[in-house]
Image (tube, rainbow, N blue to C red):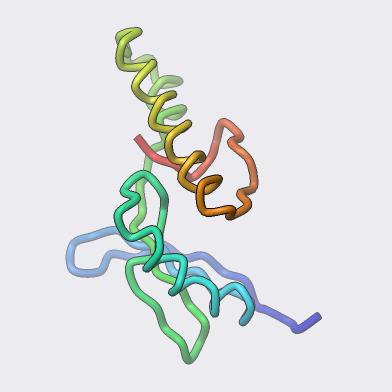
Length: 113
């Protein structure tokens, strides 16, 4: 297996928080077609830029997940909780309709509210 120096670093670029993530060549090569195919899927975390020389994907960074906000004691009305669950289900369904696998929907998933 080829060696990869995995890293994920958060930085501010043009007043936006972004994450730089180096990937294996096979993953990096799939990332652009995936980003194009799911361009309209605003609930799925897709790279916003690419650095082919170093195989780096650049993602927008969200500091808090919905779980973090709920743990902080913020009150979410039941109707809003249902919306979040529906959006999560729709995001996973977008993967299924394209026959793309996903790593699951653990509670700390990358899908953001």
